Image 1: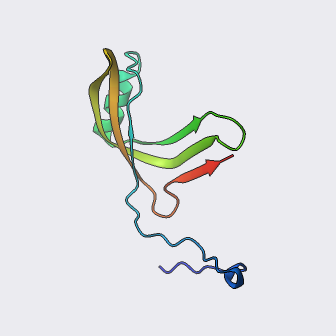
Image 2: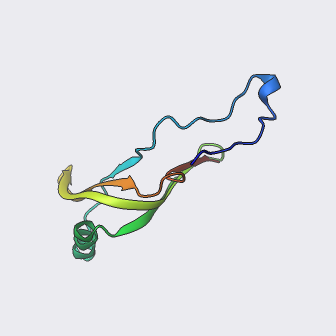
Image 3: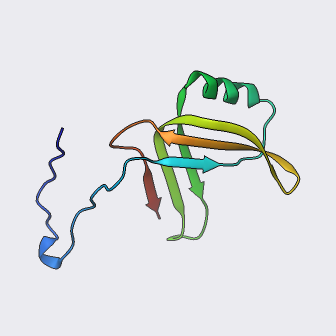
Length: 106
């Protein structure tokens, strides 16, 4: 399947559209461990159950970021340690081909 893009209206100014160079999008997270959700997290990993990821990095206007991965599959869910606090070391990969990762700065 070929992706057909419309003509670039900014070509005369020397700008080109983005060109995907890789489609292997992965994420690594290490949130504080929540013992209430640990069983569900592990079962999702073991069963290959997908989910979604949305995160916001707060800041001042113009310096805030949001990240969205609409479909992710867990690759690993290991216990970890961050300065003496238990964490979940979570690795995940995008589970959708052409809409795997969105980054927004606002």
